[in-house]
Amino acid sequence: VLGVVVLTDYNNKTYTINDVSFDTNPQSTFETKNGKTSFVEYYQQRYNIRIRDTQQPMLLSRAKKRDLRAGGCELMALVPELCRVTGLTDQMRSDFRMMKAMSDHTRLNPDRRIERLNTFNNRLQTCPESADVFKIWQMELDRRLVELPGRMLPQELIFF
Image (tube, rainbow, N blue to C red; front, side):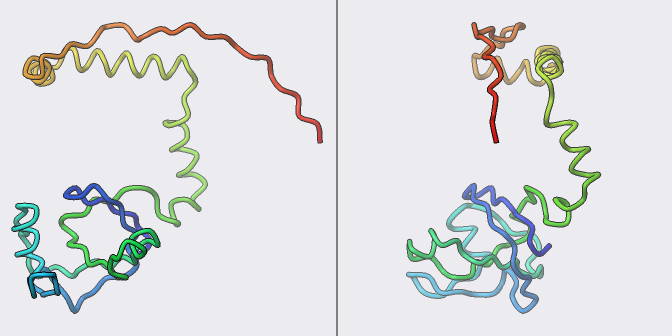
């Protein structure tokens, strides 16, 4: 868990996990402008989120310099059930095979990218659930991708 980047849906921010606090849980209290409150009460009042597991240990994240300048706390306590893992860990980045496999899916040539986008568009067009959502939003997708005029520039020569 240490070094993992997580995203919290309630404020759409990312945090790097620096430690796990087994001494605190969502029932633990902390100071606010209005006095002491528990994490359970705070998330219920502020975001209308009900924390299910009140015994889980809290994740700790060191505040970013920008947040410290804005007057934030040095350590942020995060409720694990409200966090989603995002990004790559250092261990993943150092795994050559995994990075190669991932690049095969993320670095596509233009023809392959067009094929994937057309397949995705076709799935959206034929899926009844997405058709219902499009009707609710009064939205429609074109079957063709947008084509833009462009030109190929000659390759630059770099001299060392």
